[in-house]
Image 1 (tube, rainbow, N blue to C red):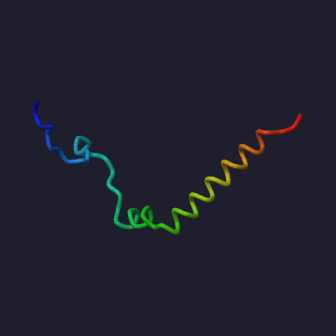
Image 2 (cartoon, rainbow, N blue to C red):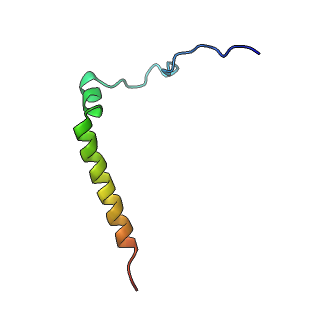
Image 3 (cartoon, helix red, strand yellow):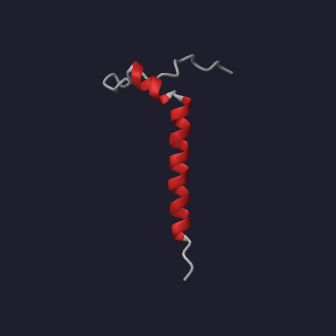
Length: 56
């Protein structure tokens, strides 16, 4: 059995792909900000579900 090729996990086939800046990476990795975004998203999703369950 042959050994799998050792390649980088980074896709390098797209040379023109935008690369995030250090500032944007810092914001994406900010745990308190991610928790706030998570809570907002879950709140919106819960409201959508609750509005969809109207009693007729």
